[in-house]
Length: 272
Image (cartoon, rainbow, N blue to C red; front, top):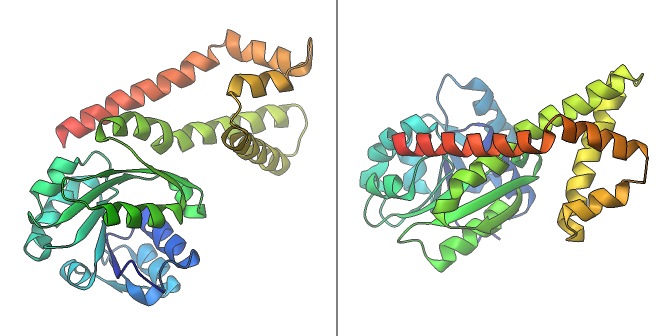
């Protein structure tokens, strides 16, 4: 069944867990074809992988030795250290990094010249198989590597290939974006609660409204402005609500958040 080969994870955080769960659920692989190295103090990650039936260890070398594809899912600040550790055994392996701010150049410099590298930017909705991921090929990554990466990432949501120069604004948009949306859901619910809705109902309705609106933009291919106009009747409640948002600078504030996050990503990438 598994044409992709054995998959290993260096690091066992939430994104790694989400990917493992997605790969298994999509039928791309079985739990016994996965292996993960987890810090011994991270008991929650250890238990999560074990519940999936994935072999979990505390050392990195066995993960690389036994895997065809290795996901680099440790914290960005320890990526160079971890890659240097496994460099002697990294020949002819595909390393897929989900570490924010770690460039293709940095990844390739810390691995064997015979290793292949792909850089990925996922986001946290991958935990519920609704992620939004992009990837960048390294200099030695093959067409098959790209196809395998696409298949794996589509198991946890959507995926597309981009140029590395786009990763900072993409990180600011889809990587940080869930936080902006969570604040919006919270704010929508707060307003509804002030007007009399029970809190749990307000959260349910707000989250479904945001999710459905996103699907409508994506699947209808209509411009968001057209869809907004379709909801806005002359002198209606939506028109008055939108005027309030515009008066308070909603549009420029959200756009500004993406711009500020992009600049911070560039700082982090430069420091890395």
